[in-house]
Length: 173
Image (tube, rainbow, N blue to C red; front, side):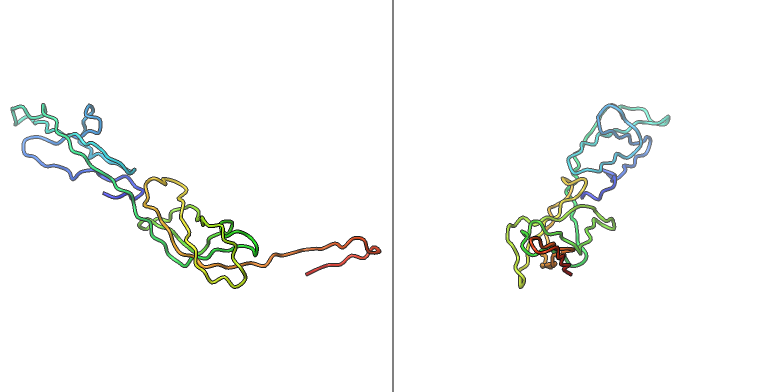
C-alpha cells in the first residue's frame, strides 16, 4: 500500500464456511470490521475465525497475525514553476509560483524553497531546484523537487524626498 491521505483497508477480507473472520490491530479487541491505516508505517493485523452454531472445534482460539506496510506517497506537480523576487535578493528569498502539487486527485498545500544563495542578475537564464515542503503529513511523502526559472521584479519606489534643497520636493514614478 502507498500513502493516499485517506484511511485504507489493510487487508482483503477473508471468507470461511462455518464461522466469521474477526480482526484486531491490538491483538485484544476483535471485530468483523476490516482494520484501516492512514499514515506511513508498519501495521500488525491480528485475525482469527470464530465458529457459528453449526461448527464445533477449536476455531477462534488461535490468533494469527500479518504485517502490512504503508509506503510513502508520491506527489506530482502540474504547471510550470517560476521563482519570483526582486533584483539584488538571494534566490532563497524568492517565491516559487506556478505549481499545483497533488497526491491522486487531492491538492496538497505547502511551500517551495530554494536552498541556494545565488543572487540572480538581470539576464539570469539559470534554472534552480525548488524543494516542496508539505503543510501537513510531511513524513508521509517522498521528497519532491522541481526546476524553476527566474523572474526578477523591479522594485517599486513610491516617493523619494530630497532634503537640503530649498523646500523642493521631487516625486519619482
